[in-house]
Amino acid sequence: MRVVVFANNAVGLAVTRWLKDRGDAIVAVVVHPEGAQRFTREIVDASGVPANAVFDGATLGEPAVLAMLGLLQPDIGVSAFFGHILRRPLLDLFAEGVVNLHPSYLPYNRGHSPNIWAIVDRTPAGVTLHYVDTGVDTGDIIARRVVPVEPDDTGETLYRRLEQECVRLFSDAWPDIVERRAVRVPQPASSATTHRRRDLDDIDHIDLDATYTARELIDVLRARTFPPFKGAYFDVGDRRIYMELHLSSEKIEDAE
Picture 1 (cartoon, rainbow, N blue to C red):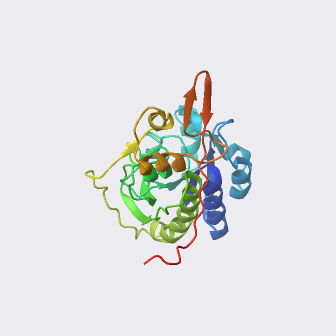
Picture 2 (cartoon, rainbow, N blue to C red):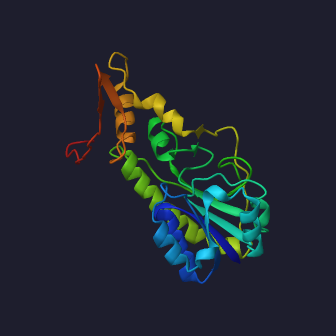
Picture 3 (spheres, rainbow, N blue to C red):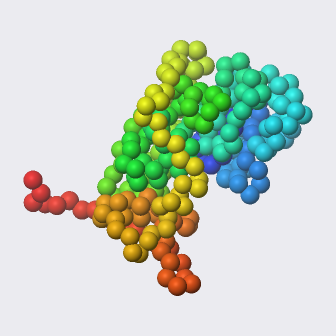
């Protein structure tokens, strides 16, 4: 198949390299705009596409860009940690659709920061490969796997394990997709949860006069520990104090 890769971050790079090494025909790469790019140079280099086949994700709604992508006659799109929502008429360019890697166990934690909400809301964590439809992370599931949340996980450590599992899931599922053997499973709506970036504001401010259970407070602090990003904080006078939680574990020898 002729593949357009929508990629950012370490997972986008790993997927691009894997596809290229496998011999799939990558005909274009779509990247994040400058200022939101991670590993973009490496992704483009790994893809092997010429400069005129590299597109800015912020321009995907422009008719001229859609026309240029259409001239490449793509069969399928692969979205790997690509932050822009893909909409029609872009989706209509792909006869075999667009598949997306999402670092959550869909339909839990659609949208932003699923690693954080799996800890805070105590919902299942995992990774999912699904078809893209007109919603946000709502398309039919191709494959998904649970990634357990450990009691000493932070937002960062869980995220890193989700990254690794995303790449493994994709490499396992991709052959069935290109051979048109993949089974599409509609997502159950009853258990769906969705979060936006601004939802983090609701948990980041720790009110020093509020009442939390120890579990609730620890879960927020560890979920928001992901340096160098700012996380949970409290205010004292004109000062804002940001917090990180360091966790270590050891076996309790006499535990039954």
